[in-house]
Length: 270
Length: 262
Image (cartoon, rainbow over all chains, first blue to last red; front, side, top):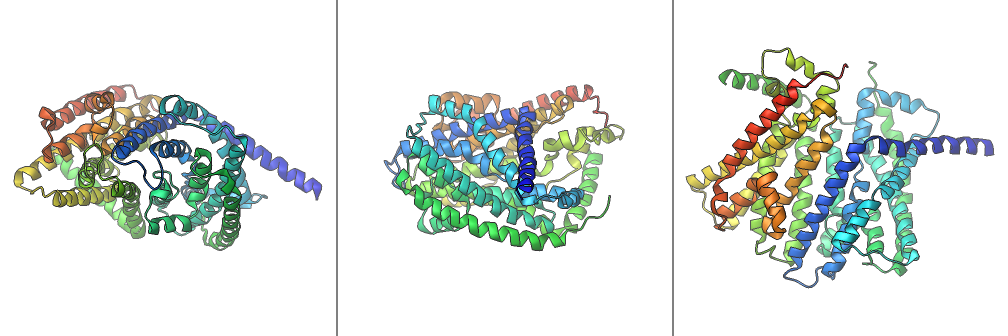
C-alpha cells in the first residue's frame, strides 16, 4: 500500500518536474506573451481612465479599485485559457490517444498534476510583469500575509474546479473534430464570465446570475477579488466552501462524462 | 492576373468541398469567432451603459470603430490565415518545398492553400456592427459613403495582411514565427477604441509605424465628421506602401530559405 503510494508519488513528481522545462524551452513564446500582456495592460489602463472621466463609481468600485483588479486580471488571464479540448483533438487525430489510454496511470490525475505545476510556474514567471504593473501602472498589493494565503487557497480550489470542467468539455473532442473552434469558444466565454475583462460587480443582474452559474469566476474573479482588496478577507471561508462544492460536483461529473465519452474513440491505424 | 483568379477559384472550390464535408465543424468554426467578439461587445456595452462616453465618443461611435477594425481583420483572416501557420505547417514539415517546384508564385500558393472559414464569422460581426452604428448615428449610405467604406476596409485588410506577411517571413530563419506575428498583430487591440483615449505617443505609433489606426479610427472619424485632416484619406496610400515593403521583405526571406531538412 505504502510502496504503491510512493511509486505513484515518484511518477507524478517526475511528470511535474518536466513542466518547468517545457515552459523554459519555448523562450520566444514567453516573450511574446510578456509583450502582449504589457500591451493589454496599457490599453486597459487608458480605457478605464477614459471610462471614469465622467463617473466616480461603477458597480460600487472607484477607478483605483477597478484598475487594481483589472491589472491583476490581465496578468492572470492566460492561466485560465485552457485549450485542453484542442489538445484532446490533437491526440485523437494523431491516434496518440491509444498510447495515452494504455499507460498504467490515471490520465486525469496526470493532466491535473501537469496543470497544477503549470500554474505554479506561470505565477513565478509573472513576477516581472507584476513588478512592471507596480512601478508603471500603480498596482498596489496587500501587505497582510493572510490575504495572500486566502488568495492562494482560493486560486488553487477554483483552478481545480475549472480543470474538472475543462476535462468534461474536452470530451467533446471524442464527438467532433472542430476542436480549435470549440477551444476558442471556451476562451471567449471564460474571458467574459470569469471577470477577466470587466469586474463582475458592474454587470446587470441577469449577467451576474449567469456568471455565478458558470465555474469560470471561481478561478479568476473570486481569488482576485481577495488579492486586489475589492472583497474583504473575512469573506474568504465562505468562498472556499462554495469552491469546494464546485470542485466536488464538477470532479464527479468529469469522471462520469469521460468514462462514457472514451468509448467513442476510434483509432484508424496509421 | 486572370490566370491567378481562375486558379484561386479552383482552390476555393476544393476548399469548400472539404469544409462542407464536415458541416457541423464549418458552423462551429464560424460561430467561434462570433462568440469571441461577443465577449468584447458585452464588455463595452456593460461599461458604457453606466458611463456613456469614452473621451467624448458614444457607444454607437465606438461600435463603428470596432466594426471597421473587425471587418479589416476578417479579410486577412479569411484569405491570409496561412501566414500564421507557415512555420509549423509548411516550413518545419517541408511542405513549403512543394510550392517552390510549382509554376505559380509561392506566396499565392501559400495563401490560396487554405481559405479560413472562421473569418466569415468575423466578417459578419463587423458588417452588423458597422451597419447598426450607421443606422443609429443616422449616417446615410450614399454611393460615396459606400465607396469610402469599401476603400477603408480594403486598405485596413491590406495593412493587416502586410504586417502579418513581414512577421511571417521570419519563419524562413526561426521556423516558429507565431510569437513574432502575435506581438505585432496584437497591436491592433489599440485600434478597437478611439485613439484619442491614449497618450500622444501611442497615437503616433498606431499611425506611422504599426498603422492599424487607418483600419478603424481615421475612417470612423471621417464618417462621424470629426476633423482628422488629410489622415482621413491616407489609408489606401499607407496600405499600398506597406504592401510593397512587405512583399520585398518576403522575397528577401524566400531567397534565404534553405528548408529544415524534414
